Image 1 (cartoon, rainbow, N blue to C red):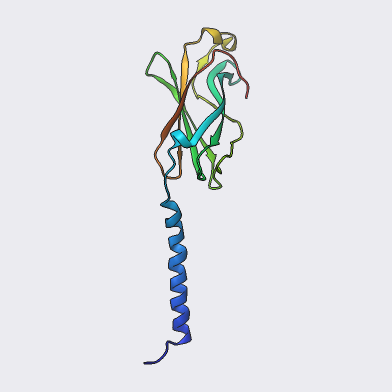
Image 2 (cartoon, helix red, strand yellow; image 1 turned 30 degrees about the vertical axis):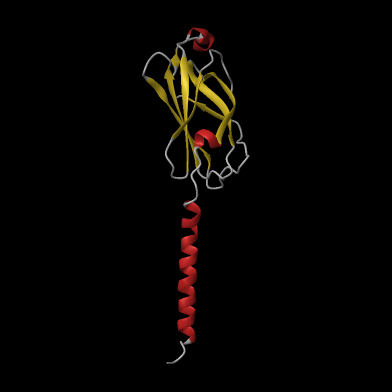
Length: 164
């Protein structure tokens, strides 16, 4: 039996290293999943109505998110559903990529996030009539990586104007 040729050794080594490198993402992706109900805290919440210019006023939410888990949350998304408290009709959604592939490290807090509904009230002087608007609420859902959407909070919209 003859020893393998140097080219064969290089091919085997390259194949082995390729398999190891290709398998690394699989080992990190198979770690324990963070339940965002426990691992993500909504902080510094402010709700109200914001002027869209002209005569349109829409419900809005300002918040910060803190990663209270021991794992990095990669590709963190947030969806908000705005609706009236008394009705099932929705006033629209706001969707935001909070952090991309860099992720949110354990203990880290996001910058202030400001999201608003696409629909609200339109009319002359709408910004002066906020106290008379129907009661509204916003429901927050979050997800990271390829995990399912998780409800993380629900807040009533204050009957006051807020600025971005």
